[in-house]
Length: 181
Ligand code: FES
Ligand code: FES
Image 1 (cartoon, protein in one colour):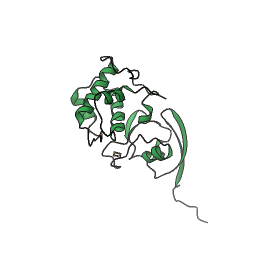
Image 2 (cartoon, rainbow, N blue to C red):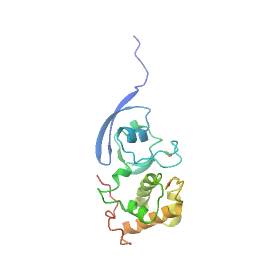
Image 3 (cartoon, rainbow, N blue to C red):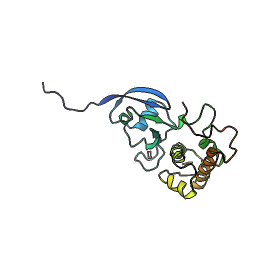
Image 4 (cartoon, rainbow, N blue to C red):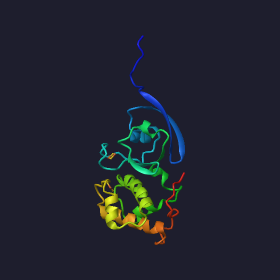
């Protein structure tokens, strides 16, 4: 019998999500967004366009923002992922989450997880951004209802709080925005 040269339809992968180690057997063609939502029940990662345009599915892979609709689940093998569920520390919001609430940075909230994950990485690289730099930093995320003024003001507020230049919300997490979990 001739050995099959067909690629395996499934593969076992191991990675971490929000500090939790997971091992899954995955269809090789399943997207990372679907793995997060369907296999790991992390439904805070939203799907909008499903082809890399809207940014709703943004998560962090090794602390860099990626579009989980454009990656396969098997590409997460041996990487560390962080989703919006990994931002808060229990009941204590991440400073960006608190700032989006306080500065009216959301309405329906569908785009919000993607904006938050983009902004986490952005403020880590640029903790004292200008408005123009924020606009460029979030240019790959689309919001259909809030408009961008509230989102920009939320990121500015979070940046001030994380730098210690603003007293902050009483329930805001530690200002370093460190990974939780
Ligand atoms: Fe991934 Fe729109 S759902 S970029
Ligand atoms: Fe509704 Fe952005 S708040 S899509």
